[in-house]
Every structure is written in C-alpha cells, then in structure tokens.
Length: 110
Length: 326
Image 1 (cartoon, each protein chain N blue to C red):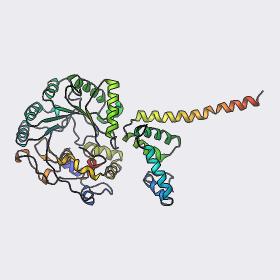
Image 2: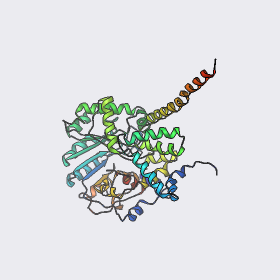
Image 3: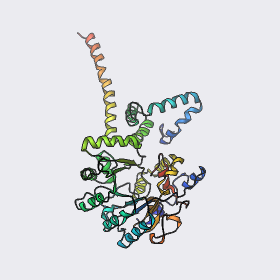
Image 4: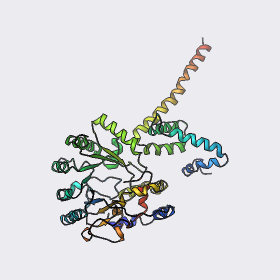
C-alpha cells in the first residue's frame, strides 16, 4: 500500500454498507438529515463541518467539505476563519488544562 | 480562438465520460425545439476583461465584432420574426461600434430587451449615453457578479474588477435600475469562481441581497446562479489545473432529466457576430451550427420550427446539472 489515504477512495464510502446495510442506512439517513437546511443554513453547516474536519484531521472530510463550502457560496476568507475557530478551541482545550496542572502543582508544592 | 480550435478542444469526451447524446438516449429523451421565443445576439468576442471562466475566450485582443451590415440583417430578422425576448451579449457588447444602432433597431421588435454586461465596460466613464439609452428602452440589464468576496471575484474576472462592479451597480441603482418602483430590472449572474458547482440559487440570492445592501446599499431584482461551461478559456484553465476530468464527471453525475424541458436552447436562437445561427451561445463557442449546417441570419424567414433537433455536445452536461441553466 503506497498510502493510507487516496482521493479516489472517497466515493467508495457508501460501500461501507455492504456488510452492515441497516446500520449504514441509519447512519446516512441521519447524516443527510443533519446537513439539510434547518435553523442553520446548509452553508453554515458546511463551514462547521469543514472546521471539525480539521480538528479530527480527516483528509476525506477536508476534501469533501472544502468543495462543499465553495459550492454553498462560501469563500476562502470565511473558510480560513472557520479553521481558526476550531484551532482556537483545540489549542484552548490544551491550554485550559493548564489549570489542572497548576492545581496539582500547587497542591504538591510548598 | 476560432471555431476550428474550439471544435478540436471538445472533439472527444474526457476519460470515461458518457457522451451526452447517449445519456439522453439512456433516459429515453431527445432534445428538440419548442416554440422559439428568444433571439440572442452575440455581437462579438471583443471584451475589456479576460475572465478565466469565459467559454468564448473573449478579451481585448479579439477582432471578431459584428459589422453594421450584419447588424442590419439581425434587425431585419427580428422585425420579421416577432420574438418575445431579445438578448444582447458578447464579449462586452458595450465595445461594439454598432451597439447603439442595434439597441435602437431591435427594441421596437420585442416586448423585452435584455443587455448582458460585465459592468466594468458599461461604467468606464465613456458610456453614459449607452446607460441612458438602455434606461430609455427599459432594457433589462443582466450583470456578471460572481462573488461577494473581492479576492474571489478578482481571481475570476481580473484585478480591480470587483470594485469597478460595485461602482457600476451603485450607478445603475442611481439611474433607477433594481429599484422596485421604477420597473427597471437589474439582474445578477453568479458563476462559481472555480471548478465547482454553483450555490443553490435561493439562499445565495438572500445572502447577496443582505450583504450588498448592508455593505454598499445596492439593490437588485433577481440573481441567477449558473455553472461554468467547460469550453474556451475556462476549459484551458481546467486542463492546466488538472481539474478537467473531475469537473466533467461532476457535471455529468448531476444530470437531471427533469431539467431538459426548461433548457434555454429549446426556446432560443443564437446569432454569432458574423450572422451565423446556433442553438445557444455554448454551441456557438464550440462551433456546432443550428440544423447541422452553416446558416446566415439573412437566409431564414422566421424563428426555427418547433420539433427541430438541437445540436449537443458534452458541454451540454453544464445545463442539465442540478436545477439546470436557463
């Protein structure tokens, strides 16, 4: 295997249903319902998905939702800001645990 | 680019793409004319911009421009044919030396006159007379405006074009265009700024309306979101970026059989700058003649007959993807 991730594998995603069709159907029904227009627009949902794709570092999702965001009318400026939002949360999640570190250090220290 | 080059560009389908005619056949469909109600006139490929998505490869260096003699033949055809809509396009039609003659000659012969503009040519400081003429004739102005983002718009249309477009839209609003009480119609055309499909029309219209009003106080009537057609300069760009095959596949995979009835080629005849007839502006770009033979506008007596077949190519997937292209 030359690489774990190949772009041409993305369209094969539905094949995951071959071994567990009922579970797969439930998942994709749910997935499609989540991304339908609701209180949030489809464009806003795609921006959230793009940001989360970076947090979970899924190359398939980054590929799909970059195209999806562009096709929903978002631009590179908005998409970059979305990635910064998730970066801030991810970085902040590390940093805020510094409070735990400080608590423990203070308890142990004279 | 001449038509011979255009033909070579699109002679063969890319990769495993099913030919468009075969897709129609597989769905039990054929593409035939209905009642022809629209006359589209492409006055030439001369343009002040060199947009990357242009299916005609229009630009400042192009020499193909409608002559006074051809313009007279087009006006005579409109007079004897009683179309519902006359649609003037280019290149930048503003740059054709016979454009005033055409507008004045054509406007009495159809209830609706449309004028397609890239905005920068119309608002270059030298064409107030043309803007006023369009207003006097109550022509619908159909303006290219691809994105609310300056970088995206300029990447498609050229540096500085976004700002020029905003200035032009403000001027048109000042003339009464886009204002509900005047009835002067200003429509926007939004093409994707790359190798991806257009945003759904309804939400994108809502967003453009809000942002244009909030940021620049601009109003408009309708917005049309159209896919880019893989011909001309856009096809070259797709090839250079390695996007051609995936873009064609994306268009073909979006084939919507329900879009066939509403295709513009079923109700339109398109005339090239030299008077040659085509089924649409994209067939014009590709050099696919109406009725499979080169016919000059002076040779026909009226609108093409209902039921006559329409020339197709793989670029037709653009108009059948998703909601369609009208």
